[in-house]
Structure formats: C-alpha cells, structure tokens
Image (cartoon, rainbow, N blue to C red; front, side, top):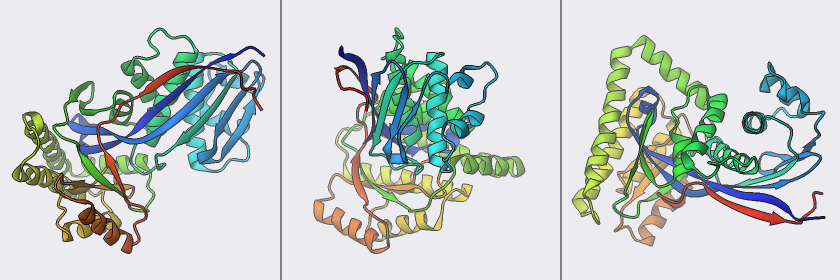
Length: 363
C-alpha cells in the first residue's frame, strides 16, 4: 500500500483575563492561550470516513459514501442527520462535537472524502477554557489542509471557519475563543478586530475547576434577558468590564518585570472584574468559594473565566510566590473538594500544522 498523505494539527485552550460577557456586546476583552491543547491526526482513506474521539466516547465510528449522502443535500440539517449516523448516542457532548465536525466537513469539503480522524485533548470539556473552539480550529485547519486550500495555514482563515462552527454550537458567541486558539499569544479582542499584545512577563495562573457544569448558550441567553429587562443596570456593568480591559492593556503596555505595586494593580483589576461578573449574575457559590479561599491566603487576583455559572476560575500567581506558597494554596483548595488545581502559563503558540506521510493501514 503506498504511503498516505495526512496532517497533524494541534490548538490551545484559552483563558479570558478580562471582558467575558462584555465582548458579546462589542466591548473589549483580553485573553490568552493556555498550555493545554487538543491534538488531531487526519489520514487519507479511500473508502470510508472513520472518526475516533475517545475522550467523548466516539470510538472509531465509520461511515461510507452512501451513509453521508443526506449530509450533502442542499436543505439538509446537521441536527437531523446525526441521530441517523450515531443512533445510540444520547450524550450532549458527543452530539455537540459531531455537529461541529460534520458542519465543517460539509462546509470545507463539500463532498465525501475518505479520512481517518483521531482526536485527543488535555482540555476539560464544557468548562470555559475553549474546548469546542480548539476542536473547531483543529478541524478547520486539518480539513482545509487535506482539501488543498491555498490559505490552509493562515490563522485568520482557520479562525473564520472555526467561528462558523462555534455559532452552530453556541448560538451567538463573541469569536474570542476561536481567535485565541488559532492565533495564540495574548490578544485584545473586540468584535471584528484583533490586536496581538506583548505579555510583559511570564503570566502564571492557577486553574481551579469548580466541578459545576454549565451551558454556555443558556448563560448567554440569561444575560441577554437581564439586559432587556434592566438595560441601564446591565449596560453599566458591561461598560465597567470594558473599562477594566482598557486599563489592563494600558497597564501592561510599558511594563517590564512588574514591581510589587504593579502586580497589586493587576490583581485589583482582576478582583474588580470578578465583582462585576458576580453582579451580572454569572457567578456560582463554588466559584465564590474559590475566590474566598485564595483571598484568605493573600492571593487577590482571582476571578471566574468564560461564561461562568460553573466551569473554571483562575488565580493570578505573583512572580514572587515560591513553590511552598503556591502549594499551600493548592492544598487549601483541595481540602475544600476542588480537584487537581493546575499551574499554567498564558501566551503559548496558536494552531500548529504539520504535514505527514503514513503507511499505517486503517483498522
């Protein structure tokens, strides 16, 4: 059997430092890529499409050209097709991931193409770190490459396709998740525009999972309803969030290695942002407990990240905080039932693409 052309792709998760929810309403946000990645391998196959997403329980599902004919019909709806392709699935994460996959498969390829696609990920699913965007970015980059698109490695092109997939999943996302995952680094984002920022120092955070699942689409709808019923109150909160994003960008612009007073200012912005998000109604008692524990140990830069309502919080770690002080914080959180808090760095590479040749036969 001759060697088969394929591609390896990976994309990072994201952390919103400032501006979640505000960014949906054309306010400014600041976000960075995290050193947790989704990795995808795509190999060319002649007869069938094989999808292997073990992290979500989709194990080497396989379809032929006849199976996928309905997908390419002009009036076809992804929601109607997936139950026929995966009739035993009731898992919402499986269904959401396959909606993302089949949407981009149809949109980019426009025809049946036999492929073997495997995915693995470090990113917790549905917890506010951009797992769906990283998957969408990997799929967009991989399928564009396999289809011979001339701009297949352009992060902006990849991000635009990934955003279309995110809209299918989340209704009216801001676009920040796919932008960060595709471009990497630290960015300032406002609908329609993206600016790469320079991190003045190695930004370390402790990621803490609340253990509370949430539905991004429902949380966004809840904020929209509150904005409709109390426009002046909610708009003032969103404007306050916007000003914090602006203040953060201004603060780091000429900052080298931060002095203690600079770091206090960074922590204060994070503290204020979380307070505004709490007032917006998107926090949760477990998120508040994370913030309380960290502040009790004099880590003041803690806030929820992403849609809220559960998911993750992060705590900014001062450059001066040694291993023992950080471990004391981790232990205190674990004592409250928060599992495996993890240290992470912000500002890693965005999407990575590597063409491969493989003679490995499909099983």
